Length: 495
Image 1 (cartoon, rainbow, N blue to C red):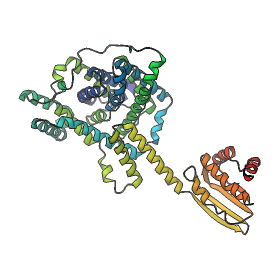
Image 2 (cartoon, rainbow, N blue to C red):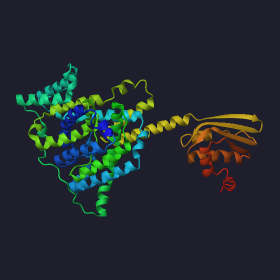
Image 3 (cartoon, rainbow, N blue to C red):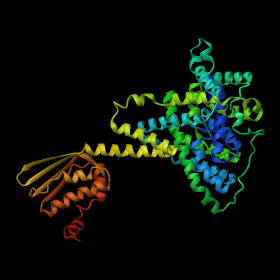
Image 4 (tube, one colour):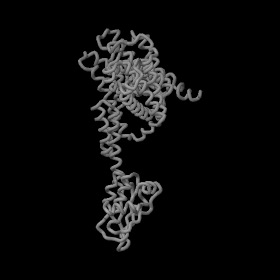
């Protein structure tokens, strides 16, 4: 147990503490902004971010990943808050947590293996673009001071690490925030600050139970929202975990992450917070700043609460330009630039899946819809590719005999090709169908085999099906009708 704590919590203490501080600073304006999107008080988003980050540090399946209130989740809450109010949102948050825990026990995290690399790349690129686009309101209709501060922030972020010794000892995003805040305060610049985003809470969160009627009508109201929140939350969390796995060359426990997200959301709902999930932007900031262990996630939530409750006078002075510079760095670092360079050499189907994922996410601002579109397209392309690999060889070993050898996979996408490969115009007494190098997968494939066999039987030929592997034999024996004399007789008679 102690060895496990050392491996996950205390192997990278200094870097985890500093990266947690950077993430906490970046979380403040994000949590406030997402609260505004959802139509609730900024305290709801800030309390949720604190609670989710702290809880997920203990129960999550991916050390170093940051979870908090997110824009993708906030967008799903708007209608519920408008029509029924905050108390129903808190109840929906609790139910979301329960559904996510159930998903963890049902091992639904394993479904991520069906998400192809091109979908993940599209997801990453779309998120990078959304993160960048979210900064544009802070860069429009502003004075030149904002552009100068943002440019200076980017300069610090990218140039500070090049300094000998000190450049590696402090995370450059933290240096950027501290330096630009000091400059803005010293010069008295009239630019937008964190304090302008909304009022920061001045008290610690307290335990509360949503004041909603405990009846079926309440369940009917919150269930659709909770299901949507649970799906989007798990999808974004598992996708983010996959990206962090690649960045750190480590593996995460996806089913544990599902349960952890559920427990964290229940905790958030009981402390007056909204539902949340993993945040790719803040997770990348954490990794880029040196954070690797669970301590960095815990510190992000802990420092967030300390700063907004006890240091709000100082935190409210941070210029938004400093945080915009950090988020632009995140968007640049998140975007897969190699995917653009590889467009010429990648297969067309891969490029279509990636671009479609990006386009759907940008059009709907819904990451789940983009990933769903990408997965469906990737599945269709894969099925089409496998279907085209099926080959049927025809031989005529004797004058009154035809021999067919089926090679490849027979399923719904190749069933039509399977039927079309047989020549029913040749009059023979005997037909042999060799399935030694074939595999039958579904009912459509079995129906196609029935179709062929019964057609030949109608023509008066004796049909032998041979060489089935055990899996194909099980499916064919269970569902085929060509080997049932009564069924064949009924079909042949036209009834």
